[in-house]
Image (cartoon, rainbow, N blue to C red):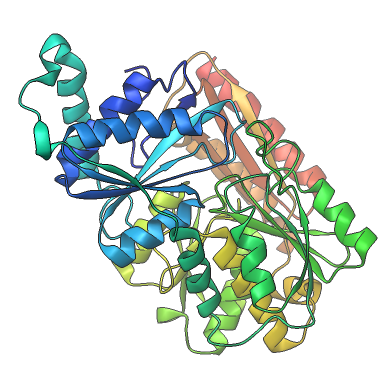
Length: 450
């Protein structure tokens, strides 16, 4: 297997790295690990989606599993079905990656990402299946015990109804929203949800052709949305990514409102309504320092995790907390969903706007003040996992300088887990100070790592 397996499954170039053979083996392994029974599969709009879907479905059916094909639906729609019906789920998607990539993301019954134990079990089963060679077809179901593959057409509509119901019967009347669907999995369901709640919706990038997913659109390319909000004089805009598990927003002035700001708005709103459990919000080490300062001023505890929604989800579940997420737009309302959900998160933010009668720009400005943040990938010949510890004294000295004379700042240094780079980040009162700190850190990294 050329791809590594993780809690989200695998991701890589379709038909080259993520081959039909690998997808077939993944399907067989999923049936064995989840114990057969049923599994629901959804996919995004990539050309390779049906190819990978067919292979993983064949693997599942060959192990006696009932496979239910939900078609093109958002990742959180599969998680919702998995949670509601107690079945395993798989999503054929590479999220915000270019259209030539694809992936297989897995949910355990209940809509949860895979635990470390399940991940290890998958790896063992994959090794056994891929190493079996000519013996791979022994001891498998035959005759009436072979699994079936059926199409399921109710998932998108039922999921959309569930998302709409989270606002408790309130509507989004009088809101004019521009919605960028990234030519992805929510191109039909997300506009339907917002319109069903009473919003006036102008939709961008909702005509997928198999090759245009995330292509100059969506949450990673919000420039078109920003222009559209301004030219149409809309109240705000929302941009999803290809599989619709993340969202960013644009206010009426055309300014981007990222995941940190959306979480801040919702955290303060939930705290005011007594819905923020233990008055705690879970974010990652990449969350802007301005978020931390704003939450501290309002008495909201910030729990920090490593980078990745997996770690946010684990912390939410372990602590029983109700809200968390990432700067990228993965926002998790743990009382409403088991994973990040761009459409759901967008609806929650729009509900705050409607209930308060305040524009998104005002809510974002009041919720937090972003500190300038500079990120850089430093290419190295020796990627050291302990680089932050090795540079501990240098990091402390730089942070001391950034926090001089009543100013605030911080730095972060971490080795990439997959690339020969060390990621360096600095936040400071000005962009110039942050850039100077990153320059200093980059020189230190290169001195140690080559």
